[in-house]
Length: 76
Image (cartoon, rainbow, N blue to C red; front, side, top):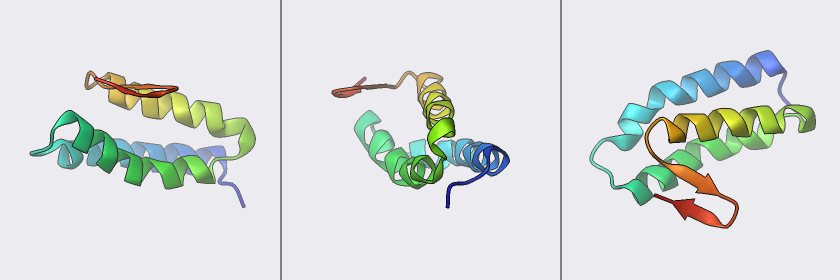
């Protein structure tokens, strides 16, 4: 059963608080790999109508750190 928008936003906010630990002693690719392990279950739990919202939030978290996800992979 998909999460409500409120639950999704709460999980995304919690994910954002974990980013400093994810970034600790890691290069860019390790950060993205670690982050994906945490973000993917959240994205998978999003309702179809909320998926774009969740993906935008995830991309914004990464962009704030100079990281970009592209359709065909990762750009530094």
